[in-house]
Length: 295
Image (cartoon, rainbow, N blue to C red; front, top):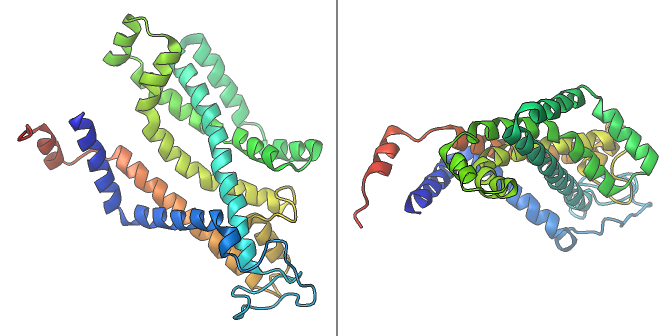
């Protein structure tokens, strides 16, 4: 137990020393707080508009200006954070559930089951999933939760491959073989022995998948197939800004900066977790971990 706690404390200390990862974590924490408390900190409601005001540049009354319908841009960015971050986390969660389940089954059972399941993955890799999502939006309507599920169903393939490789390296380990000899069921094997030992790569890939998902949602919103009014995401704000960037440049600049900072923060934090996972402890740390405790 003490060895596990010392490993975790060492991992946390190394993560804290990674300045880029910590900056990314702080930015994400602030953005999540802003999204949660948007109704309380936004100067205006997301549905507020003043047609007589129109598009105005940043001022003391509207810190980031207003759009062509007289809506406060800062308020729309804060409310848009709710949708964009929700798309990132929910769609990534869908991808994790599908990809982890698929990869564990394929890697653990191996043989013909593994061959069939991974050939399916190979075939799906070659399909134009963007067209698939567009067709879903056209056939079933522009539903927010359908959008989350459709994007998540696109992003699970790489996770399945990662999990499969990790499970194949674990299934011949002594603790797995011992559990098999004791008659542990497959479900218990997955839940108690395999999944806890692959949480590291899963967490790293999840942090790197969230920005991919947010970019995909922005692309769909740019095509007019994403979030629909009166709701807005950063993708829809960027789309609106592009349409009027020559006359009202602030409508593109501020949403674009916010979105870019978020993507960098997610990637910095994901890179920090990746370095933490795949960087072995120094020889000095290894010697200290082998030293008997004074207690």
